[in-house]
Length: 431
Image 1 (cartoon, rainbow, N blue to C red):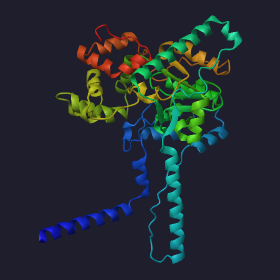
Image 2 (image 1 turned 120 degrees about the vertical axis):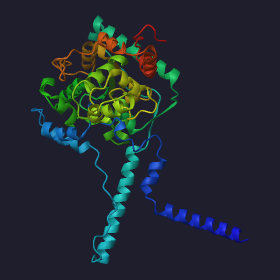
Image 3 (image 1 turned 135 degrees about the vertical axis):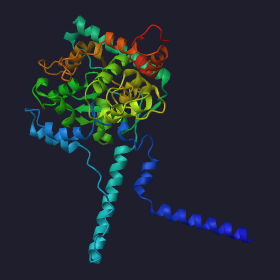
Image 4 (image 1 turned 180 degrees about the vertical axis):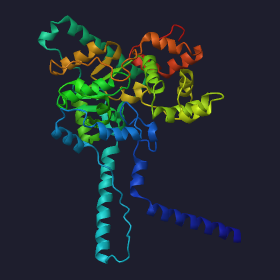
């Protein structure tokens, strides 16, 4: 009998404690739990920054290099800064002195209540999903003018675009189940907005993203020429707006009426290009963050110097990290799938360009949107300019260091990108 009473008492005590806990819980945390499709506490693993690293030095560079464009219009830059999402302020304001009067106490509680309400409303607007029907884009590929239709070059490029879009849609239909597309702000976090010419550009690192940002800045009137814009200004100046910085109405409107485009690159070639850039040159972010973890996990008898600096990562070690299900450090946008970066099965892109035909595709796109005739896609390479670009030949040299099994697993890793963008197998022994 005593045991039954004690057990009942413990149950009642636990239930009462649970009720108190729920009553005291922050309402915003409950909203977090109810919102589908959002991941939290991802740290630097979530590709939220530009197509270069986002360490502390980079943040300081933003201030030092924001004046790199001499032709920036002050009014435009102010307009851009106003569109950036504001940081949520804390509502937990405790009294620092018991000498406050009761009226001041009540006034402070009212202000906190208002702030909490605003925080919750802004959070719901920012993070809840957007429902968009399949292939809902009102605007597909911009139509050719009557004059362009007589131009065999434009007609050929236009047909290539139709074929690329068709392959992409067929792949999505075959491998993805998207009867109702749910697009969250996370899905559009890598899309840059140019309102003047109504362009949405999904950034794919190592596929001309720096030069494309220069072009968008010129289109927006932030500079008169792409040559005037320094690399650090492109990535740390915060002159370009992102689509996830708008409310639901703004995101929905632009997805349905703007010309949406992305440029992609052969997956293995893009991977080698990223490895060469991040691990074969001094880098105060990728070496300590990724290099140290990779060397520590995959190098036998690593030296103290290598473990301390993270420098000297070998390509084979890098591939081991990439293919490891339990990676010692998370993914990065420079070697992530295009399928994840730009969500082409959720967002109906109007134009799909390729790095391998960059000049031709880019200038055709600029022609379609009615860009100034004197604006062409820049050819220069502003990082490691003395080094040869990563080519098919160089890519094969790097992958020759791997075993057939590693090459096959690497191909499997990027299989959807190969399939969706119609790239052929890079090695004959792949299946």
